[in-house]
Image (tube, rainbow, N blue to C red):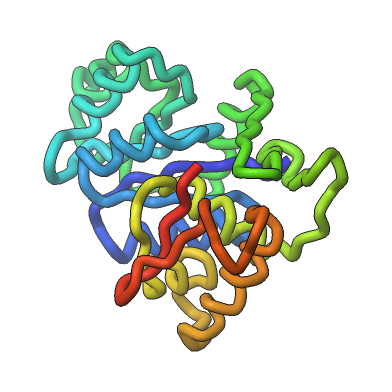
Length: 224
């Protein structure tokens, strides 16, 4: 099972480092840099754990943590803090955080703490239906008419990213960056080809897509 993390950090260099390292360790990673976007993603996604910085634009990590818990989200939260006062760290725990780590931190310790949270968290079954197919995120399976569909890891990652942003128009550049990664630079045609493959799986009629639609001049939108 691939664990899904939401990593919220406003400093671009640190965020890239965290994303790359977590991906290298086998995690499925979604990122956010701003408070309101982070809250939206946390509520819309189905994450196994959240790594949350305190000092963020929009709203602070304290506010995000409090709002998520008030709305019933039980996903484990590990807070990152540059604050030195014990009272500040206690505040995060009192608002519903499960753990905290003070900056600067060692990446090995962060990984160990995240893995500890995952071991304590209940296993979740995550299923979503899109047209004729059922996507089982926990088992990384796609079923069509009860039969498993063979998919590459890249194509499955493309599908899950579109599911995370269901109802939103995502650009080709976003897809290249989030699915293919910062250090890999395929052409935009690569995205179009993979979208075509994905339509053959999720659409009843790939030539007349009802779920994975083209937004001309911008990118694509997945309607579930």
